[in-house]
Length: 136
Image: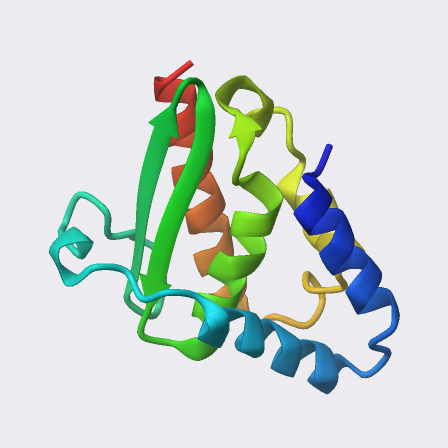
């Protein structure tokens, strides 16, 4: 269960065969994101468990889940952009039904991220799921 934006990303990745090109594409997604307002980079939005600095600011309006994020590492910022495509604009209850690991595997990301990056990605997904769970 993925958003249309994520399905489009999966289609893009199908045409990118080389992992290094996929990695660059993820970085480009991060570069295209608007930076998170400095006022939102507070302990409450900081994600623990990431090797780099990561902040996720969730907004739930009329039962629709959206979030902004930022990181001091370009690849992590790109992963935030990927997660936005996966989760943003879903109903809060639908966020909990997303199998993020399976969806990320469709991009071929699971086997190419370092263990630190994989741990950070898991921490971001856990934060998203916890927030959705607390707002159901």
